[in-house]
Length: 148
Image (cartoon, rainbow, N blue to C red; front, side):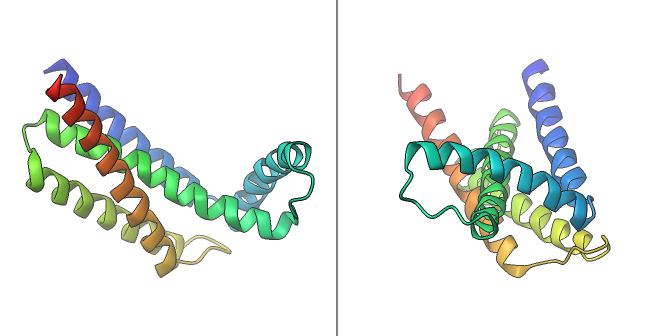
């Protein structure tokens, strides 16, 4: 029971974090991602100086990867909470994916009301792919643990 409660709390907290980040006006959101991009650029330039690290192009890649990984974690957590709630197998897999995609759609609609932000269909696709990766990862880990 305690494990299930913790699993639900983690899903809700992760959704709140996604909502919070989406609620930032474009200037704040861009400032955050540019700061992260600059730090990553420094690391990349030291590790592989021949790679072109145009900040503007690199920032777009970082932002899209952030979508993917945020939803990878959401997918992982969502499938885990469904598993803990005894919704397993294909039903759990599909339900987790539906929950994540519906949340991604609601997130993009939410951004339509934030100054300087816009809802992007491509972001929903990226979010869905991240969710699918997270759900698959959770499924693989669960299968290995159950098998041992």
